[in-house]
Amino acid sequence: MKQSSNVPAFLSKLWTLVEETHTNEFITWSQNGQSFLVLDEQRFAKEILPKYFKHNNMASFVRQLNMYGFRKVVHIDSGIVKQERDGPVEFQHPYFKQGQDDLLENIKRKVSSSKPEENKIRQEDLTKIISSAQKVQIKQETIESRLSELKSENESLWKEVSELRAKHAQQQQVIRKIVQFIVTLVQNNQLVSLKRKRPLLLNTNGAQKKNLFQHIVKEPADNHHHKFFRFHIVGLKV
Image (cartoon, rainbow, N blue to C red):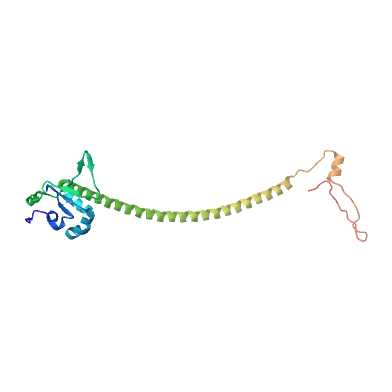
């Protein structure tokens, strides 16, 4: 194979693998030379890939082929898709043909479908997102600071409320004592007033009035000393 700087290293190694005869038991050209066959995927991945591609992953090898436009060939027998798990796997590319290594320069790696302008727009969007995230973070920090202040103010208010409640309880206790004292004082005054204002029981009959109002009983006070009159007022009972 004529080496060309325009041919990617992957394609050069692949061409060498297919061309060399000592690897024919693993990978080789098809009968018509329009495609190549991997005869035993497990052995190929285990024994060949590490020597040429520094890995033993068949799936990665197939992904590389797909990136350069290779397609897996599916055979159809009598209208039925023939797919043998343990059999050879065939790959084909219009510019990968036996004896035509000059066509390899035409094989190009697939590029992303996104255009540079789209990438630029996405970068701008990403910048906007980052800027928005930073603004949100600043707002979040402001909110957290305000919440901390409110928490401190709330604690102060609760402390003040607790002190006011204690003072209120003390005042209530003093008021109860004052009210109790006033009630007791008023009750005592009412009793005294009632005793003073209780009407006397009087009778209009002269004889009875004399008996009820004043009854003088005369009796000696002492047989050995002078006598005096003891007056009993009968009919007045307080």
